[in-house]
Image 1 (cartoon, rainbow, N blue to C red):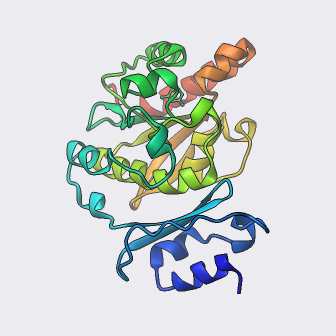
Image 2 (cartoon, rainbow, N blue to C red):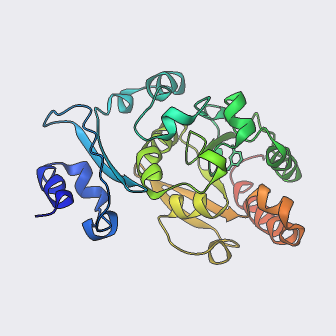
Length: 257
Ligand code: URA
C-alpha cells in the first residue's frame, strides 16, 4: 500500500472525506515528497485530505465554524485559519464585505496584493472596475455582498490550487447559508467553475442563467469575465456587459420593484 493509500484508508470512516472523493492517483504523483500534517486526531472530526504542490496536508476541521449564527461570528471563527500554506503567507484574511442580508452575492477568485494589504475584497484596480460594473446595473457595493473563493492571497497572484479551493470553499458555503442570497454573479473562470462544480471554460459558462444549490436552496448564477481580465483585454467588455444585463434582467424579476 502506498503512503497515500494508507492515509486515505485510515480516513475511510469519515463522511466529509467521502464527499470530496479524492482520487489517490490524481493527488499522489509518484516520487513526491509528502508532508503529512495531522493537527488533531479525533475520530469524529471532519478530516480533509488535500494536496498542495508536492505536499499532502491532512488537517482536521472540527467544523465549529459551522455553528456560527451570523457573519461576525463566522469571521471570528475562521479568520485565523492555517489549514493551508496561504495562512502563513497572507497579511490579512479577506472575509468579504457588504450587506450581510444581501440578495445578491458577487464572487471573485482570491485576494490580490491590495486586498491582502487592506483585508477587503476588490479594492485595487480590478475592484474599481467591479464597482463600475455593478453601478451599470444599478447596484452599489453596499447592497450586495462581495467575497472570494479563497480568503487568502496566493503568492504572486498565482492561480488557486485545487487543494486550496478544497479547504476554503466550505467557508464560502457557510457564508452563503448565513447571507441567504437569491442571486450570484461569479467573476472569472475559477469562481464560475467552483460555484457550478464544473470544468467548463468561461466561454461556455457565460451568457446564461445557471442554478446552483447551497444548503438545499436553489440560487441563480451568472458567470462573466473577471474585471482584471477586462483590464488586460478590453474586447471582453461587450460580452461582460451582455452578461450583466442578463443578470440584471433576472434579479429585477424579484428585486428592485
Ligand atoms: N481579484 C479577485 O478575484 N478578488 C479580489 O478580491 C481582488 C482581485
